[in-house]
Amino acid sequence: MIEAREFVEPAKRMGFDFWAGVPCSFLTPFINYTIGDTGLTYISSANEGDAVATATGAALGGHYAVAMMQNSGLGNAVSPLTSLNHIFRIPILLIITLRGEPGKPDEPQHELMGQITPQLLETMQIPWSWFPERQEDVENTLQVAVKHMVSTGRPYALIMKKGMVAPYPLKPAKAPAKAAGRNESKPGLSGADKPARHDVLKQLVADSDTSGTVLIASTGFNGRELYAIEDRPNQMYMVGSMGCAASFGLGLSLVRPDKKVIVVDGDGAVLMRMGNMASVGAYGG
Image (cartoon, rainbow, N blue to C red; front, side):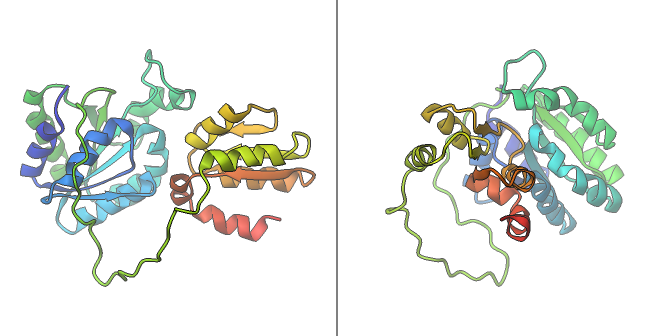
C-alpha cells in the first residue's frame, strides 16, 4: 500500500497536473489529494467518457492528463478511447479500479467486468500494468507509461486493486476550475424544506399497489433504502448500469401501458446520462 502523495507528487513532477474522473471509493485518496493541491486541477465528470474527453482536451492543450474511473464504467469510455484518443493520437494516463476482482467478494454487478477488464483494454490496443504497490516502484511505472504515451501518442492504463492506496482526508478545497466567460450566477436553492429520501420512498411504497405499479430504483442508496423499507414483488433494484434507470423504465412503460412505472433516480445517475430525459419527454406518457 502507498500513500496518495507517493504517487501524485512524482506524477506531478513529470507534468501530470490535470486530473478528471468519476468517483470510486478506491480512488477517493487521489480525488481528495488532487482537490486539495492548488498546483493541480481536478474535474469531477458526470460519466467516464466525459472524464476521458476532458482529460484529452487538456492533453491537446499541452498538459499531461489523467482520467480516473471504476472498471464498471469503462464501457462508457470505449467510444472516446477508440474514436478520439486512438484516431487523433492524443495520449492520456488511465487509472482504472478493479471492482469484481476474481476470487474477491464484491457486488454482483461487478463480476463480469472484473473478469474482462484487462482483455477489454487489450482489445482497444491500450497497454496496461498493475498500479504500483510500493513507493519505490512508482517512478518506474510512470516512466514506462510516459515513454509509451510519447512514442505512440496513445493512452496507457494502470489497473488498481482494492487497498492499494491508503485513505487521505478531504481538506478545504480551492475553488473549482472554470472555463473563461462562464456565467457566475447561481440559483438560490435551499434544501431546508425538502423531504428526506427515506420519507419520499416510504410514501411511494404506501401509495403504490403491487398489482398496478412498478417501482424502479437506480443503483446506490435509492435501491438499498427502498429494499429496507419493504421488499415487494413490484420493486426492481438496478444494482448496476448506472444512469440507465430512466431508459429502462421508459421501455417497460411503452410495452406495458397497463402498469404505472415509477423510476426513483439519483442525482449522479441522472447527470451521467441526462439525454435520457429528452427521450422520456418525447416518448413517455
